[in-house]
Image 1 (cartoon, rainbow, N blue to C red):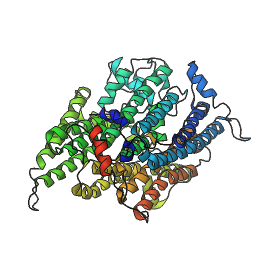
Image 2: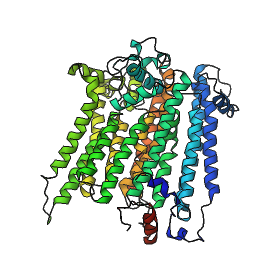
Image 3: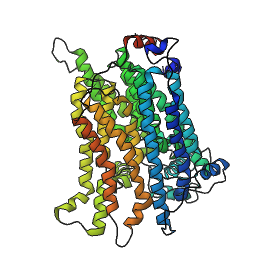
Image 4: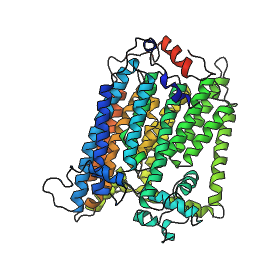
Length: 582
């Protein structure tokens, strides 16, 4: 079924394009946007190397950083020290990111406006071609803005080489391991926080290389493959939901070319794109069941719950999706069984409970080999003593922490520097959107609503999280395509604006590791940077959400997603054999 998403690349976008005289898309605007976008990536390689580079003899990497060698390492007459080097690098990176963002937005606009005159093949070639070029540039970039790849490598080697349990044995237990030297110092005594599926995958990937560049290329390459698979899943799922070709292509582009997703997948190699793969796979199974009318039957919801559970077994961050899916399944079954306006809810408990039990059994089966022989107290301690559970980073709580270090908070305000308080707020931020979303799930318990409520829940979680990093926005970006189309739908429109703006402002989180920590360590300590950082990261997306929620376009009109002729033409070629075109 998934391969139909690519096989359908020759399908016309609209009924008019079926005729021999159909006009083709003007590629020049898109090619110009792609040129600016890719050149910005190419020039940023030299910038990355200036403040986060490492030594390598790979000739491709050396050539890539040469293209941006004209960019100054220091700005103006600033002193030539580490602080000003990193400050200049961050500013230059943000300038190039602004160019990428403008090109990204314009390309999305041109795809949306011209899609009716294009062929799917042309747009798909543009999307995948740009992603592959960007991925190759990032693959050989001789710099790392995060060191998570080396943690993945080390945890994998603990299991595969040293036969140790990474959930109870920290990296520094094996001082002679080749990967330990590149693991971030603060994490060398921290056990793994990742799920067992990722632990097994990283143990396999860790066996391919023992050199620094080799480790980086292996994990980057795996993340790139996941990103490409995610694009295919986005296309396949939107098509399964009978979205118009315009929506399918625009949704695929918004995810595939997003500057944040490309950086975190293709350069930083974060496992979030692997977690996203299973989230999208589960949504695909939901869409397939919805289209076949078997959403509430076991043959549809069991594959979906297994995929969603697998995503949580890579990183537990996707756990809200499990709750939301079970709720949607319950509501859908209630609607299906109800007769003559009378709600019949008892039979609906069966699929909901069965799906929940399958999730629990699957999770226990994979965790059991790692947790067997350890006490419950030891297991709980291995999770609750992690830095992400006890400290703060790139968050509102972190701002109060830095302010308290510099000036000392007084009175009742000191409670805002409490990790316990923010843990409670974080849970509220996670669960409140789900509670409100139950109204939407009850009204329309389908794949799109599941995605929208999940997006809202993850957004609330990230805004209130004491521990935040920019790559967490990958969780949000994989759900953005399901916001489309947005005509006359406030929630979808507001979440689309929120997610896209947040995926750009979250880059400010990198200011902490490049410059912020050094400002906080000064005597006297500086804290104003954290305030401005939070205003930029969190307030702008919130404002975008509120603006698009309360102030919809005056002339908003409902456009048909597909004209009758286009539905027949598109569906007859690309839909599955079991589906009937409308």
